[in-house]
Amino acid sequence: MSSKKYLFTTIIVALILIVFGSQVHTAYSQPTAVKSTPTLFLHGWGSSVHAEQQMTNSIKRAGISNSITQALVTPKGQVKLRGHIPANAHNPIIEVGFQDNRNTNFHQDGCWLKNVIVKLQRVYHIKRINLVGHSMGNMAIVYYLLDNASQKHLPKLERQVNIAGHFDGVLGEGDRPNRLKLNRQGRPDHLDHNYQTLMALRQKYPRHQVRVLNIFGDKKDGTHSDGDVSNASAQSLRYLIGSRALSYQEIKISGRNGQHSRLHENKQVDRILMHFLWNK
Image 1 (cartoon, helix red, strand yellow):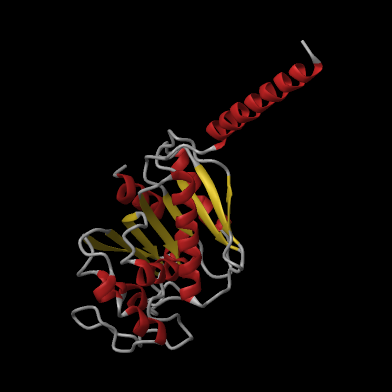
Image 2 (tube, rainbow, N blue to C red; image 1 turned 30 degrees about the horizontal axis):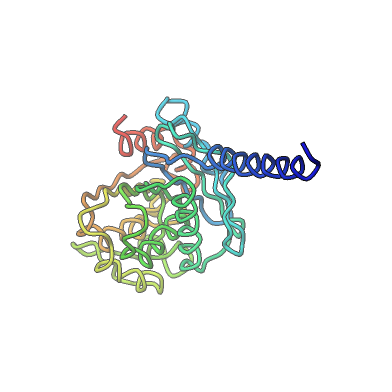
C-alpha cells in the first residue's frame, strides 16, 4: 500500500471512530426520562436544604422514595443539579436550595423555582411535579404559580403542600397576635401588600387540577400562632386558591411541636406528608 493510500485509510478509520465514539458518549451521557412524579422541597428564609432533610430522609427511610438529589440556585438564578435521578427512580425527591436565602422579592423567588423546574424538565423530561414548601418556600411556590399558571408547556402540578405559610404577613410586620381575622369565606380583614398581589390567584390558580394540603402550627400559648406566623395568615391561603383547587384541606399541629421551625422537624408532619403525597 502506498503511503498516500495508507494515510487516506488511516484518516477514514479515525473519522469513523470519532463519529461512533461521540454517538456512544451521547447515548450514555444523556439522562433517561424519569417517569415517576418528582417532589420538590423548598426551605424557608435564611435556611438551606438542610432544613428539608429531616423530612426527606424520613420519607426515604420509609421506603417511599429511593432517590434524593439537590437543585442549588445561585443569586443569578443559575441552577446546578447535584446528584443524578435514575430512570427507575421511585417517587424521586429534589431538595431545592436558594443561595440567596434571604431574598424577599417573591417574584424573584418564584422565578428561581421556575428555573429549577425548567432545568429538571430539560434534563429528565418530567411531565408532573409535587411541591412542598416551608415558611418562605411557600411564597416561592405561590408566586411561581401566580406568574406561570397559564404556561401549559411547564410540568403539571399535581399536589401542593404548604407548611407554616405566611401568606398575609408574619408576626411583627403588619400582623399581631389575635389581630388578623378571617371572614366566613376565609378572606382576611387586613391585606398586606403581598396578599393583595396574590389575590390574582383567585383567577389564575389551576382550576380543579391540584390537591392542596395546608399545615400550620399553634403553640397553644394564647397567640393563635406558631410563634412567627398567625393561624389566620397561614389559613388565608384558602381564600386565594381553595375554590379552584381539586381538593383543599388544613391540618393544625398543636402544642410545642407546632412551633414554626419544629414543623419541618416533626414526625407527625412526616407521616401526614407520606399519606397525602403517596397514600402511605
